[in-house]
Image (cartoon, rainbow, N blue to C red):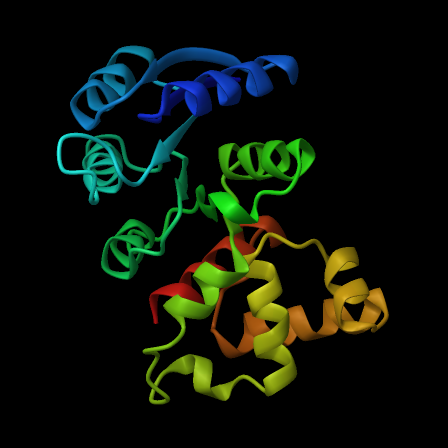
Amino acid sequence: MRVVLAEDLFLLRQGIIQLLEAYGFEVAAAVDNGTDLAAAIAEHRPDVAIVDVRLPPTFTTEGLQAALRARRERPGLPILVLSQHVEQMYARELLADGTGGIGYLLKDSVLDDEQFIDAVRRVAAGGTAMDPAVVAQLMTSHSRDEPLAALTGREREVLELMAEGCSNTAIAQRLTVTEGAAAKHISNIFTKLMLPPSSDSNRRVLAVLAYLNA
């Protein structure tokens, strides 16, 4: 699996490279700014891009903006964002095209290598990997006059865990319910969000994107 990485801090960049390579990833390019990120994505056409939000020269949102441009030029490009903060406006825009393959992790919340690698793989496969704190902040301005308002409190809990990338088994464990009950809640969510029958993995992504974009 080919990866392009954008991270301005040398030691962190090298650490991520070594971690990825230890798990069998090919790091096609590792850059420290948005301009080089765009060029690396165009040249290497990676399976996933891992992007720090804050890159030179202003260290505000250059990385996220570069990721948005790359995704417009290559629709569906899987992108995993790393940050110390939640940039709500750009995060919503990144989610807005509805094609999946999106992750947003807060650096301080990544506690071990398996958690990070699982997120990279999930995003590369077209899924989502959202930090719970990111989900919470993106939900703060949601209107009640939306399809999501039809969901029960428990269904919204299930959908929030889906946004984090939890499987049915993990959802059942987190909510202390059976896997059958978790599956039923997910089926109800698909119905209420009027998601047509397709692969469950695709409908999960569409449901999560509806949740985060609303």
